[in-house]
Length: 152
Length: 152
Figure 1 (tube, one colour):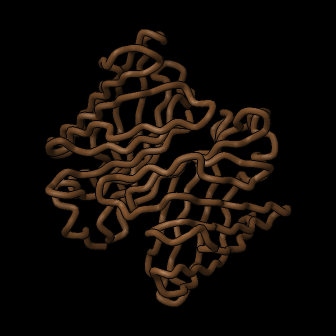
Figure 2: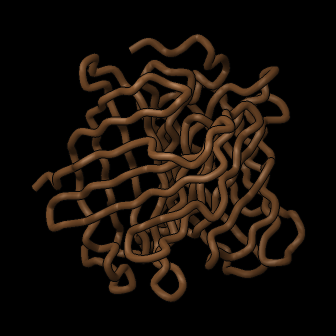
């Protein structure tokens, strides 16, 4: 199926990505993880996003999230994400694939997250990202880094 | 893998569901669709939700959405959903599987949706639902009905 031309630079994300990451935050212990990310398409001007991680040592399921990325106005792509922790994010790219939360909304029993930056760098078949986060009364700070490779 | 006991009545949703639905709204033409819904789990106290529909006559992809359902406080389950239209929903069950939007948040270029009710009825291997919606300046009204069967 052909990619929708409106996807622009988002088209480079299509595929299944696997790799490793590590994370830390004042409220938790530092950890390492194995990750699988997919960006799928059905010929429409958006990509379906799924993500899941496992503990690098334990292989036990850790996090998961899902959502969609779509072209926005003036080249500012939009990314909507739902998380099993009861959090939904709406992010907008300031430039290229560097996304900042426009809004974060919580379910009644979710832990507080107030601000997120998801900075993706796409280099051929390598996708790296950092996540910075302000949560549980902590100021905005680095939370996750990972480096993934496209499954070809 | 065993279901997490905190899932309670949400456990009955686990599986892949297929069937037909129809929809209408003042801003669109009435339509019929084929649907596939999955509620998956990894042994944790939440279910991963995916949904996609195709035109009943055309078989072309129509809608998709994804998210998570989790137990909330006092038996009021919580459901977070992301949509390729740039919409994220946080819903809370008033009773059983009758969910009302607690918040709906839009990406900058999304069409306006202000209120949603997603009323699910689970009867063994049959899952029926109705969606009511207030959107694009229309008052709250019926939008979708479908009847799905568990793929066994």
